[in-house]
Image 1: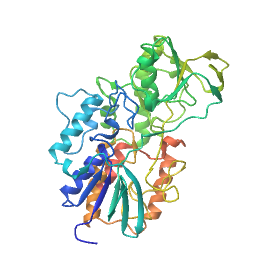
Image 2 (image 1 turned 90 degrees about the vertical axis):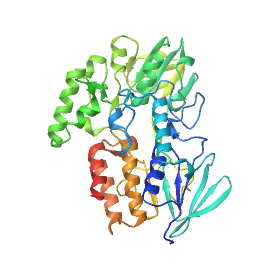
Image 3 (image 1 turned 135 degrees about the horizontal axis):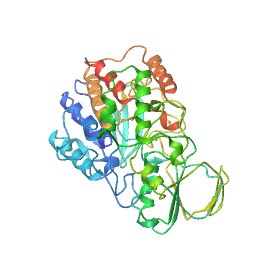
Image 4 (image 1 turned 60 degrees about the vertical axis):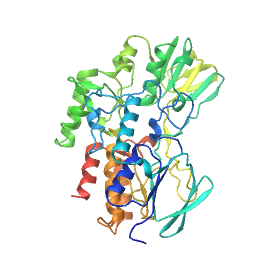
Length: 424
């Protein structure tokens, strides 16, 4: 390999732009970033039409401003605690401008295929043209390929995934059922309830729904100040603080979680509980049967709906890899060292393939920082990387509930400390 390795960065979203910045900052300037859109931003590049992006017209981030910043580029002082998608995109553009990221990006360049041609080279096919690289850093995100539920019957009304929910206008005067109470599901239910005749939300399993503020502060900032406490004490305090804010979930006709707050990815939403108690959103249990427009729930309730919105998450998809090479879509575990390094392909690095209880891009920033040191040769992979990757997958299985959404889940603060320790 030459002194200046050739590096491909896949995607110019929040992870891609910080990857470019960190590589160039480390003196690694032989970088090409391929972006399928005509602008940076990835999932935060809003479009009112169906697109790669899952951002809706009214989307705000669910992690607070201070907990969502890149490590050396603070958000503007005049931003609110929870910025809108427009403000987030403007922040990304400012970051890309400030660190001169744009010259390394090829826009309107969709990566069609990536193949390993030998142990040290990758052939990347973009718009029909092939190019060889020494390293590939995958930053394409994991919120672009919807995961659809298996509905127990044929629904004859309108069906869509929350990925395609852009505005509540099409649902005015309709009866709407949202499946799933994650962050997207709650947002869809709240927005629909403003205009729909009737809005319900179906939960198959209990879910912690956490208000955005506690004692006047963003809830993640409040929790962040308690990270020095031992985990058992922290779990008790977090559950107690939720009890103070919310009371019993049964008061909202919601199932009561029987697991610690930190065992599952939380839903951060201040409006859903308000909407439930005002009779605007109606909780429902799991669906057991669908006949045309009639839905039967596990408690025996039968109701007619015009629209079903499936807020059932996303597949971890890499359409540019052959299924025989890497396929995480149906995986039950994803063994990557530090959530980044594939144990069999040391020149293939994943940036942003995490689901934190917080914002992704501060973690992507630190991952890219570590990756740049690795490529530069100032940090090395351990010899037992495969064993460590399997151990991390085991740890995730122990720390979180067994659900597809938790395959790449991390605790924000502990994972960030782990990355920082590698370069300390």
